[in-house]
Image (cartoon, rainbow, N blue to C red):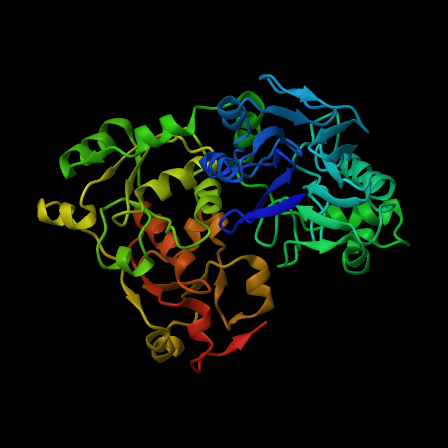
Length: 462
């Protein structure tokens, strides 16, 4: 028997490949399914099942396409109601996979259909649990994503989650391996550990939600405390996971159309497509298409696209480094943005050579901000998360988190130059592109952000 975690850092998401004898199962696959198909061909086995732990909100799973391409069966736990063909398992139902067995443990709380899959090896030993968003390392799934007005509240779901953990998961052997659906950085939890695999026994020691002496009321209070609003795209991803979606092959075909500068400009104008620049922050700063939005591939690309653009139906045209166009279209599709209409052939150089207008962002090293701090200390805006700001920040700086930037536009001075920074320069360049698109140009970006700022003599407080 073989178990492999396939972890995608951009989404902080774990998919799983389980093989026993000549059969394999995939748990919570990513949208692009060719790696799984190539893997089973290499191993000389057949995918029998695609197990889904729940209807995911933060990414679009590859379950529908994978089942179509391989003839495998999609399995959900109780209460799931997809519109496509799938087997809705009963609590306690077992599935044979070669010499191994996978048992369904219905664990509602994150969502009503949330299910944990217990892997039992050929000797009958309980080997591992695939917990989806029910149990993370150091945390549990947030209970506010599946609440329905007047029907079930986040407190109701948290109470169900308490029961699921204590009745279904905590009684399992301490040496069992926990394989969660997400790790640190995911918006599906609050305080996940950086590790992605652990034992249940260690989680009982480290995870606040598994304290043996914790009452249900205490659990509900702790789990629901401090929850930030979910990203705008979450409900749309749930719908796609429940109702199905367009083939990734078609999405790639449409998205990988090379466009001349004139064609690019025409599509952007006629369809109101978002011009999405996915290069490096400083490349965007030194020259970009006016009114384009920067969200670089070398960061938490897909979650920021989902959180800031919001509408997965939004038409998009890409400005990307040569050779990374397919990666960009693929990663957009992982969060349901399937309406990419092509990319600028030749990139920004082709745009410049065509004689079209170029815009820039003034971006300076932290040492320059340090030299200007005394005169500008009231005009510094920190776009990191509120928690990062509260931990430590520039004295006198304002907190304007990137995820809430549109709510702070009136805060920025109209006739005075101000500075914008984040932790390393990625989020501040996203913020810069948004500010420029809103007609705000009187700002300066701070390169390398707070990390570089701390190396100067700028006063830091908390």
